[in-house]
Image 1 (spheres, helix red, strand yellow):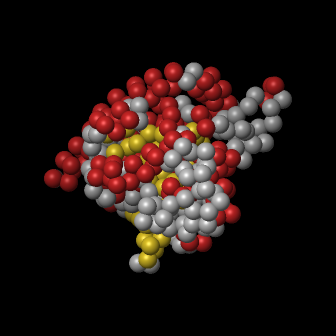
Image 2 (cartoon, rainbow, N blue to C red):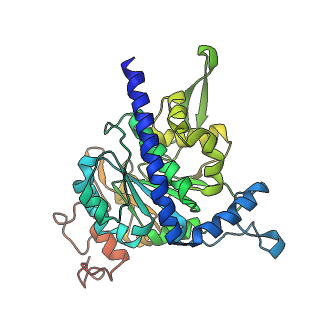
Image 3 (tube, rainbow, N blue to C red):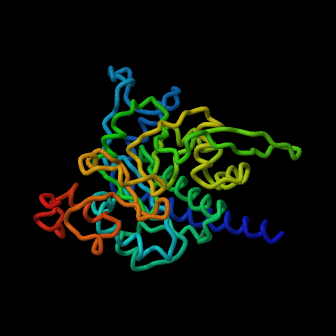
Length: 340
C-alpha cells in the first residue's frame, strides 16, 4: 500500500510540475519565433505519414539529410540536487556556455541561485532523489513532456557527468534524412537486453531490444517522439517503465524498438564512464559527440588529454577538452592548444 501511495505521489507531483513547465517552455519558444513555423511544417508532413522535413510540392528531396541548427535541439540534463555544485558547475563553465539557450536541467530540488543563473531553465521535477528505476523514470517523463511542448526538432538527453561537443552534435543530427525516425546513441551492452513484460491476467512475456545508455547520452527526432507519445507522454512513461520494471533509458529503448519497431542507430561518437575513455585520442576529439569521466575497472577513467590544466586542476579533463575545442574561451590559457 505504501509503495502504491508513493508511486501515485510521484506521478501527481511530476504531472503538476510538468504542466507549469510547459507554460515556461512555450514562452521560451515564442521568444524564438522560428519554432511555430517549423512545427507547422512538421505536422503537415507527419499527417502524410512522414517524420518531418521538406515539401515535395516544392521539389524538396526528403531522402537527403536536412540541415540542423543548434536552435532546433532540446538538450536535457538529468541531475540531482546534491550534484548541483559538484557536477553542474563544471558543465556551466564549459559546454553549456555554447548551448545555454537550448539546455534545460531536470533535478529534484529547488535551487534559486542556479535557476537565476540559467535563465530559469532549471526544472524541479519533485521526483525522488533516489537512483531507483521509478525515480529515474519520473525525471525522464518530465524531460519528454517538456520537449514535446517545446516544438523543437530534436530531443537529446545527457547525464550530469557528460560533456557535449555541440558542433559535433549538430553535425551528426544533420546527417539524417528528415523522413527517418531516428533514435541514436550507444548501447552499454554487447547484446539486446531482455525484459519481462507484464501482460493482462498476470501473464508475462520476454522481450528483447537494444537501448542507448543514458550515461552516454542519446537523441530522438520529433517525428519519432510523437509516435512514442501514447506510451511516453502525460504520465504514461512511468506506467510503461513499470510494465518492464527497468530504468528510464531501457524504457526509451523498449518503446522505440519493442513497441514501435524502430531500430537504434548505434553510434561510436557517444561515450559514458562505463567504457575505457583513455582510448579516445586528441585527434578524435573534434568528432566525438559526448564524453564523460568516472571510474572504470576501479581506476580513474578520463580522456587522457594533456593541455591547459593539470590533473589536479582539472580531474575530469572537461576544462582541457573545452579549451582544445574552443581555444577562444576567455578563461583558457593562450597556450592551451599548443601544450601537450
